[in-house]
Amino acid sequence: MNIVGVVFAKEVRDNLRDRRTVLSTLLFGALLGPLIFAVIFNLMIEQQVSQAEAQLVLPIAGAEHAPNLIAYLRRAGVEITEAPAAAEELVAAREIDFALRIGPDYGTNWRAGDPAVVELIADTTRRQAATNLQRVRALLARYSQTVGAQRLQLRGIDPLLAQAVATRQVDVSTPQSRGAVLVGTLPFFLLMTVFTGGLYLAIDATSGEKERQSLEPLLINPVPRWQIMLGKVLAAALFSSTSLAIGLVAFHFAMQTIPAAAMGFQINLGWAVIAQCFLIAWPLTLIASCGQCILAAFARGFREAQAYASILTFVPMAPSLWLSLSPVKEQFWMTAVPLLSQVVLLNSTVRGDSVPLLWLATSWLGSLTLGLALCWVASGLYNRPGLVVSNPQ
Amino acid sequence: MISVHNLCKRFGTVQAVDGVTFSAADGEVTGLLGPNGAGKTTTLRMLYSLLPADSGQILVDGEELDADNHALRSRLGVVPDAKGLYPRLTARENITYFGRMQGLEKDFIAQRIEQLSSVLGMEDLLERRCDGFSQGQRVKVAIARALIHQPRNILLDEPSNGLDVMSNRALRQFILDRRAAGDCIVLSTHIMQEVAALCDRIVVIAAGRVITSGAPEEILAQSGESTLEDAFVTLVGAAAEGLMA
Image (cartoon, rainbow over all chains, first blue to last red; front, top):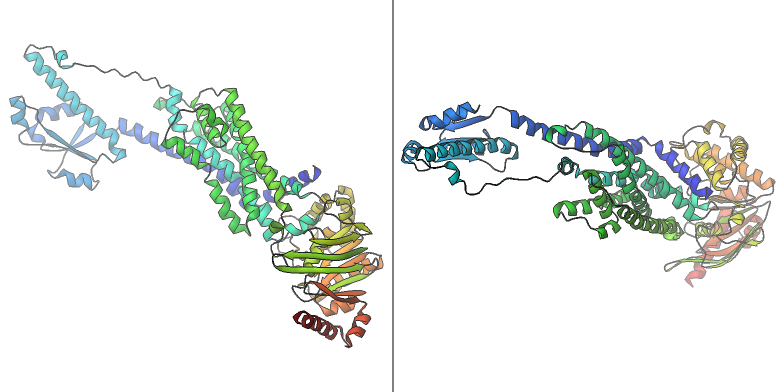
């Protein structure tokens, strides 16, 4: 086993000296996820908060037809501006988010007791206007209700009669589970980190070795070839684990920059949760490293290996994508499936649910079995002359 | 001492090595001479257990070689045609890595590196990273790492490829020194001057077979030519005609 250690130490030292490997995979690869995460969610939250608090500006066409409504809106703090009659064009051209149009027959209908029509012109596919549009709708509905209630009272009727059913919503989501929507992307980023962390080392140690013509001299040394390959796989797994750890620590700090409490979220990415996430995801580092070494060993050169291994990087996307497109309740059998089990368990962990020990054990057993099987396949590769000698002459 | 009996290797439909037999004695330089694609490299690759032979026998110091016999394999020192180094490691680290792979202790490796670097004239290279080394510098490091464990049987596959005159002279002197020390040296080449300057025995290989073997004078006498180059052309040509017939 001493040879495994010698190869392991050499690959780690050799690749740590490669600035590109260290920066691109260990650092950028691991930090990119948390960084995107922090920036996107800070922007989203900021936008929601600022819209909810900002001065509501409502362009109105035909304001002169409904002086009472205008006065009500002004009292509610809405700034009224003048809009042209053909407001659709302006909304379609995105010059204004929405507009209200009041027709000349508003007064006639009002006095007759018929519903007085106002038109709210908006593009409902524009998400950033959604909050303000909702505020305008709520104001109009409240005005309609207030005036309606007054009319009933004038006729001696209890306005409550007009309200046959009252819906009261009871929200059972907890601050943690509301936060989980936010951190639902975390498992995805973590799995990507696992798959990119050891990628360059795996390629450099296998097809890189072939390309720079050092594989043949290496294999001439009188040692079992599986020990050489095992040392390389373990070095890649170390880089992958390190990348995972850096990514998790970065997520811990990224989360602190997000004003979650202000939004009624509670996200716990404390050190205990971080440690648990590491435990859950760790067996994947072996699977990723072995898979990458196997693919890269078959490649004729560095570029070809990169192409193969990049395809492998998409593999962890599959279970996260499946779970986010068709959200199913996590079930026990899922914990036996490598990759899927990590996504399921990581999701539960960041949501603040407790993960049953049996589930964790099954996940480890399933993933380590696959990891060791791949390790065995990788170790046998250098016994195949076709992978060792590129030009059999 | 190395001897090879009836070695065969086939790649698909190509019989690359077809019953090669020769022996290389201690204190002699044995040259495998042949045109490109004659099967020299494949023969050597089977000798240093990179490729398994289809049939035949290889004896090292009288003992039958087998890829799993690591103790016997470490009696060989091999400088293959591929002389890739690790560009981010220094020359010393490259050599030490191979020493560790041979199971040597660090102190012993350091001592051997001192010896080899003074013999090969590479003291100034030791602490430099191998990125950007010239071909001559590469060959020196490749030889040092291959011989770190003091093997008495040395295999060199076209060692002078790409070397300039000065490096080539140094390499030849090194090989002659090892011969004087009683080592068994086998080298493959297609360069006549090298054969004339170094080899005690010549094994001429063409199309995977040994055409003839013997001391340079015997080869000349057999072919009736006055120079080795003419002898080589005559012998290989005759063998090719034989194959055609």
